[in-house]
Amino acid sequence: MKNVIFDLHLDIEVYLRFPKFLNMKYKNLSILELKRHGDIPQFLKSGLKFAVVNIFPFEFINNKWVPINITQFMERLERFLKWINRFKIFKIIYNKRDLKDVLQSKNIGLILGTEGLNFLNNISDIYSLYKKGIRVFGLNWNEDTKFSASLKNTTNKGLTKEGKQLIKILEKLPIVLDLAHSSINTFRDILKIYKKPVIFSHNGFKELIDFEQNLDIKNLKLLKDIGGLIGLTCLPYSININGEINFINWLKTFRHLKNEFKNNLAIGTDFFGFKFNENYEGIKNYLEFSESLRKFNVPSYVLFKNSFNLFSKLL
Image (cartoon, rainbow, N blue to C red; front, top):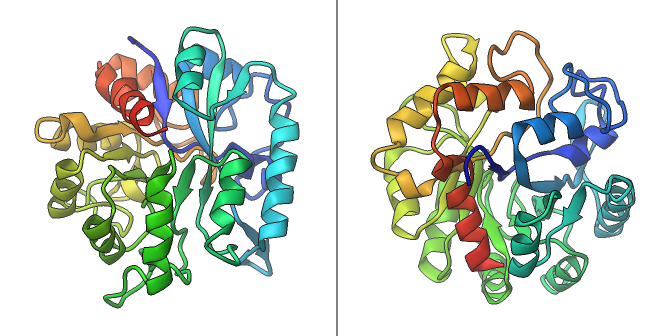
């Protein structure tokens, strides 16, 4: 579909709880407000059709991110659903049939995820999350868990023994596994035992910008081999070249990768996951970003097709 977007990482839930932290004022999502990363008018004008929305399982206490527990996570999920369901434009996606139905409608489909599994008490808690609608499982945020090492880990650690058991359970469920914040050794360990494609939902290219969340060419080739996706992100650290953060730097990432990784490129904005800044030229909010994508003729396989095809396969 032309000029339609599938976003692998949109942190609307974080905006609900931490607008001031994100340098934005909280306003009803039905109101157009260009001094925030997005809202319903921006999404509609941009052609946003599907987005993965993560429930962020951390609380900001004394200038530090602290993991919540599973009870708090479930409460947070229920609060988010109650809030988002006020806006009739959004529909929660649970399976591939929902994807097809929303595609033919005027709705925007939201796919629920979690960014890290620090809060799990037991591996079996995965089933409770699935029953509540979680379909994208991010193994880590920026902390190790008892299951896997995060990208902040400086050792050779990857999956733990419990982590391997967890992956086997996830493999049997119609879900998507997200390794955006996991260590490369976690990725390598997963490749040995997981028979499905995975995604890196909001990452960049390490050879262009040496940031820990960006993937190097070697690991991009491994991702290609299993048919996975990398969501090219607007996260400032991932597209910072000589102190400048703008759409052109995002475009440079795409142009570096488009020939070799055509079937593996997607969009993963991470909007609402970092502070709003009016100086980020061409990329400061969803409307501006979408206009930049169209101005430079970024193809539909990146904007939509690759992600839609993978999610249709896995859900």
